Length: 472
Image 1: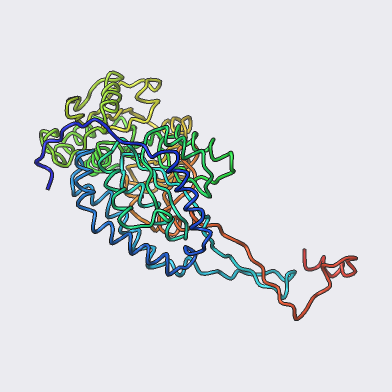
Image 2: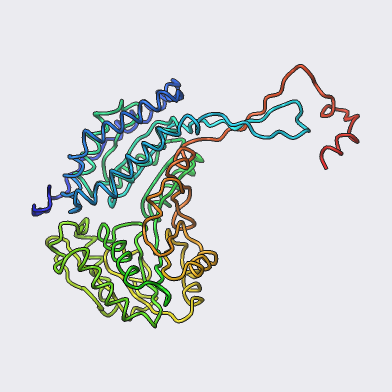
């Protein structure tokens, strides 16, 4: 629909939400939550349906905005943004009654005749902050868990994708009462103002630096945080790999959103015996995916900003170009590029690339790779291509937020398994049941009847001998 259009640059004119408006929204949502209306599961299910209808109504505007901001095709926007959210909504609607129901748990004899329960209650008023790279999915997907758990939400999209952020705001304002769900717009000064207020949960997707800022602010009120961050995710191609399939899946994972993906493979370790074969196969895979002239592909996303373009192009000087290397600043296009002869201490190996430049290193023994990865911050993803037993062995001897054996990216697509980081790549997890739990407090309840009152626990502990037998 939009692929024949030529994208024109627009100066960002995002107007920030005022301090007074933010304070009013925070207080209004606090009062709304206290009213108890969000506690009813039927209310939550109705609001999930409202969100689904809102997405259906506004999706064309969302697709247009994503093309304007990122040169993201309708097809890719559907696969990586909209369908993930609509699938999450369907999953929550199907299971919410079961998830929200109190769960009876075993009770030890020492508490006889009591019974024990886990009760799920909403944390309360929340702030959800999202980045620009998947601006719809990474803002609205956490909102599904928020609604499901019975919370309210202030949403803060990224100002770097102005068209998409404004389209999301229009959708939310058309769908929800601002006392329940509201959107706040602006740059870093607005972030600072938002972080100065008290919430019951801050859910943030972004850089480790922004995560530290959020945690510092949250510490004032001991506010819990879920942080979905990033890092340098390694990708290993062993000598036992199916090189053609590995190259295609890696090329897809690296060029998806033009590498502007928090779980994109960031750097490559290729076994020396298959290095040359892999480089040729990668080049062939890029042409298969995007055509001989990648710059003309309607399915190839461009850099979000001039600043991002300049930073990623700057990495090309950190090694020898093995494939690709072309770029155009006017359209913010960067060709998928393999970079060899890289120094591990160079910027391209120190900073998260967040673009289609791909440093390649070779290895002989897997211990070299494991040692290198362990010496770095814990990554958000870990990718291994080779025999399955070796893949499980590599996973067992490393750590990351998530992982794939003989694939990239796809672990994020299954909402039956959690998505989240570890260490520098984040904390907390969501998707499916884990999204419901992320916005919930699990409350422990013991119910004790009054028809009997055993004397064991009372002073002066006359029955301590009998009690010890039970406590062994």
